[in-house]
Image (cartoon, rainbow, N blue to C red; front, side):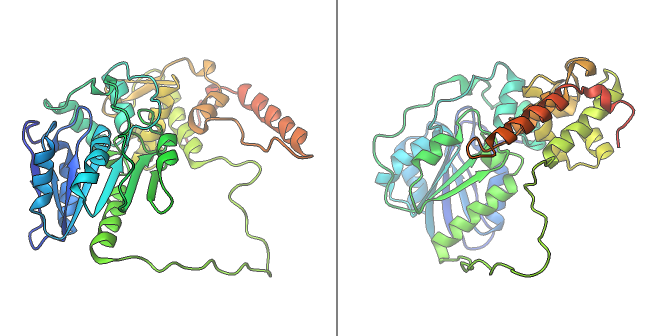
Length: 363
């Protein structure tokens, strides 16, 4: 059960704490939503303190003042803006900015399903938000405050962000990060990066940052291996035509929905039938939903079905939904007209084929 929104919450290790992270939550959140992160950090020997929403500077100062070991200020969403603002006066040993809203946001989510899609692709966290009476729906519609007027303080900074974040597009963070800052951008990550589908690698990156601050722990910087000059050439991943795992997973899932003939199918059932990891499929289905190719009932738990007849959805529609474009080509040089012809040929091929080509084949 989540902690009440009106109180702060602390997760501490059983033994001596290696340091304290004070986390400032974002729009609509409360301390209980950081339980998973708190438990993970406690296992690694760190204390996580999450003050109540709206806690004043004195409360945040108090949470850091009594800490032993390294003292780190973390903020998520608008909490990241506040952490930046407070860092100059509080002088923590490090600063972590997660999902900081620095660029113009995309469209405000129109409903709860849209807000869930914008916040997280983690099935567990989506279920937690849906059942949490203390979570504030619609808070992302509130405009984020402007960036602090003061420059980032001279201390180590870890930026955590999702590259598919529509609430706070990552371009703004890339423009703000300084040389020497630690920037971790999660592929397919959305706004609540600390509670998104890849929360484990985010927590691992956070622990690496904390250990470097507290103990100077780091990996040896390896020099690149010498190029191999003999032997057959290894196949390159970026071949002229390459079908990504993401696109393949999308077509496998859509084949299941075509076979379902209008009935809803859960992500779990599709993942088992297709042999696809559930977490990967959840994110793919969200992309297909945003593109209007599938519709859902209460997200992954309620199941998906095609939003239009199979004959009205082209394979090109699926490629655009999952990859963003039909092809990525060089637009200069003597071969540019050749690549443009290739793109047109591929686009014509994919547009001429619909999901009816998947009927009867769910391998």
